[in-house]
Image (cartoon, rainbow, N blue to C red):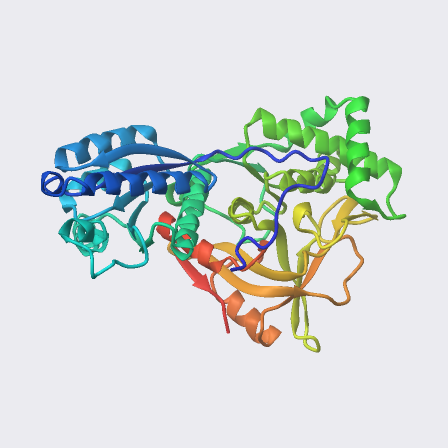
Length: 484
């Protein structure tokens, strides 16, 4: 399982932001008619419920456990508690047979994705010694089709995991749904900055701002370049010196770096931190052209260092006004995959790889080596000059992931799993990774380009399609996997 192959903790000296905790609501239940008939049954089921609650709490989430329900009235009361708690995921634990009327209100009122658990006490029953009461503790599978049928007829999406209480395979699947719900929560509660204006002519990058909160949730904060400029003007020399010291610790400095440009990048970095804090941003997409070396052009050209530091701290920043890619980077980051700003750079038909990266923000936590700062006298395709980040993503399994917008306005997830391999890299102040997708690079490029993705995306560590498919499911979106 490659989903969490690498840690994406920021490099030493950078403090990662504390993401909003994932809140999981838990309700366990069984048919109350059984309790007087089989006095030992309920205590056994409650022990299983406590263990499930304990295991959920180990999945880096906050568990809202509303206890054990035995009839529809108790189910309705649990539904109100979970609705008020504002959960990101509702887990219904089917400990034995229970009627659909006990859980339908919970699912209908919560407004959160629903996960049904059928976890029997052990791998199998002891058929030679079990009586009816002991069998009923293994009967959680019995109501699962009933719940599924009732939920579908009520228009309530759901997913389920069947196994036994200490079944690690089942808990891997449960953890995936918890992580997916956490990503959904991050999007629904997120504040996403959009600074400057669209790179002229990039029609694929243009995003209808209403569709983002409509389909993903959250808030889009539209910012002016002056929102950053005035903060740049307020940065003190001491703050700049501190940022320079941090950058020297994190980066290898190429001899091409000019002190004045380095200091300017550090100044803009401090101002970016202040901008993010003042507007409570969880992500940022930016671009501003500027003219003839004016203040706006200099501010925009100085953002790469600060945007990379923000990205490494868990606040993804994407250039070229790429809102959907900053969201893709956020999703990958919350899955523990990093997520670096990426596009296709070239194809290597001899080694059979796709070379991809960008001349902008990088996720420093997933670098294969100590990242390099290179001085550039010109930014290709953009106005200005300054320092830029150069590295390749850690070698091994990776996933390319983008958020496309189609002709009907719907958003679509697009993902493809590959492997970053060693080989020659350009030394031009860009992030560059050589990705082997296990097929002809030209055929992969044609299929990927026709998928609905834009020309930017996030590149993250690990094979993440399974997790991304779960995120798409809880968001009600389609995921296209490019795999030849």
